[in-house]
Length: 91
Image 1 (cartoon, one colour):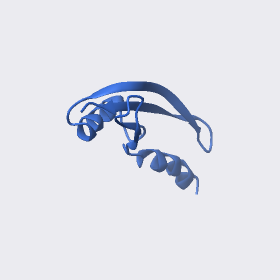
Image 2 (cartoon, rainbow, N blue to C red):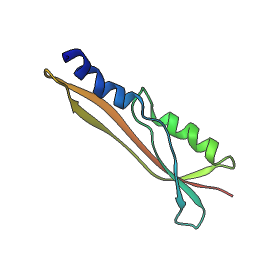
Image 3 (cartoon, rainbow, N blue to C red):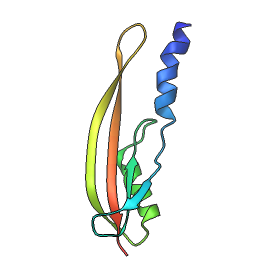
Image 4 (cartoon, one colour):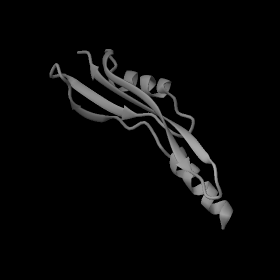
């Protein structure tokens, strides 16, 4: 049972994907907020997705990086990088 409990937090983190949330940006243009975390994802994954959703280019509105500590059963902490990027598409 211990092995299963150690694996579960990792599986939840590894399943995270880059899923942009669309909204209207400060200049009235299409904008996206996205989280690029877990599963070895980096801020570069956010930039790649930004190019896909804004093929004519984009302006960065906000960029944040932090770490999340997930306590592990039996001791220790799993450190997971958290990256957030908010962009507005150029038209």
